[in-house]
Length: 372
Ligand SMILES: Cc1cc2nc3c(=O)[nH]c(=O)nc-3n(C[C@H](O)[C@H](O)[C@H](O)COP(=O)(O)OP(=O)(O)OC[C@H]3O[C@@H](n4cnc5c(N)ncnc54)[C@H](O)[C@@H]3O)c2cc1C
Image (tube, rainbow, N blue to C red; front, side):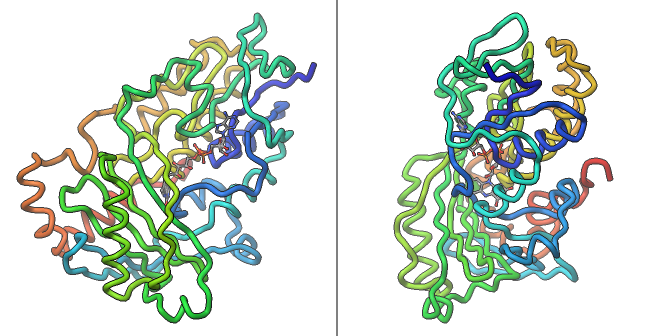
């Protein structure tokens, strides 16, 4: 029988960040992931400066052998409409490849790694949990993303949750494709759906291009994606042979049927808890921040992981991200008819785009990094 203080299910940014902080506090931690790393993760790979600070990333060192693309502007508009370009005096975000980023974070976390192993069984015991019939742990941390088995075990119900459905493709640009790609690496392109129920992006990170579209309403998602791809090709922004096959994934925005983040001897962090920002869909920052807050509460519980001792984690989430509110998404802040009529008008306004869309919704300019 293998034993540990904490078993973390999922080695994405949430799992590796929590593991790192718990190992630093002296706990014996196991991270279990169904995939071997490096692994691909469907994601645009955009991180904000708060994430860099919270992860204590040495960016010069990181960038030596990995993609790390500074972003100092955005080209935005409504799909099918005109676009405007905004500039910033210094980098306001960065582009990474999840394949590299997640492996980097996981390999430095110091926990014991069990990779390529799925969760087959979770049993509650007097001391905590028995996982897959052979690992005894006092505490279980669910960091397995949207479909996390720990979240399911604690009662998340798939059918009743409103999810963002997204499709994305990331590929290495050949020399010819580079000549036919007009997306400036420092200026990613964001285009909003007319009903504001989602947006699409073209994001060039070094020699990689990432194209995708996500919507809160997943009906005819592939059609939206195909139309967007065609539109970008017609405008000469991306190469004609940009792959047609996109990869799909779903996740919950904070506020949509939130999952209870803690139970006796168990916590959920990151996408497993459904924490992505409602307006932008950014999920890496909430994954990292929830992991840091969870680790603080776990350490303070001093090995007594009863629900009452873990409840401060739920309070920290509310203090940081606000009270979940079902109508907090970008598509919900205006009634539908007004939304449709105004979207192209608003998105053509440089003031609205800079101050509301980018600074407030996407960059969270008013919210400092945790611990800053
Ligand atoms: C198309 C798309 C684009 C996005 N773009 C961005 C972006 O640009 N910036 C941003 O901040 N956010 C973005 N997001 C959201 C972001 O990807 C997630 O919020 C983030 O990955 C959450 O991190 P996590 O660690 O909670 O989960 P994940 O990164 O999903 O990691 C979960 C891990 O758990 C493992 N796992 C799952 N099930 C099991 C199991 N049964 N047993 C064992 N292991 C398991 C998985 O293999 C995985 O490694 C995007 C999402 C999508 C779908």
